[in-house]
Image (cartoon, rainbow, N blue to C red; front, side, top):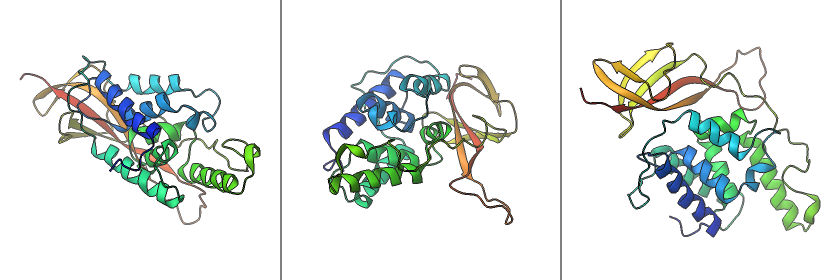
Length: 249
């Protein structure tokens, strides 16, 4: 699967695995891929993110939504989550779409944005990134390189592509909360429109004691009324997924 990956893209996966182990996670989530991307190639986002958004600020957002736990040795097998697997599949498709022989960091970024309901994609949208805009910029950049335009064209150098759109809603909104087992992702229970529990707090759900280890939001595509014209994507937070560590009963 990784034969087409550049050295930089492979290092993103290496760093993502490292980040997951540092968070004490059971699998490599999309936010770990994003942190790996920022470690290996921060420039791929530096020109795209609005002023004030940095690798440190993104890391803080992720840390505030994840329980600080005992680190896991990097020698322990660390599988990819389903969403992360989707990201890698999308990255390969994006490389093919752009006519690129190899899968590089920019394709991983597009892959994250395409997995639009995942935590990492939501963070990027909060920062103003939109899949269609980033894809068009990268396509035009590659076209400029192929035409020999040189340094006059680049990511963030103009070109009339607006990446400053605001995200639709607050971080968690007021949607349904799903509680899942952190180990296998199986649904434990649903709690509609209740306060979002803090990281590290204990909850009792259906007689089951558990500790909150991760809080992530999921976006759903909004269908506007027929008399309203909406440009670009309009994804609003509809569901919050809270991962739980089951405690001795």
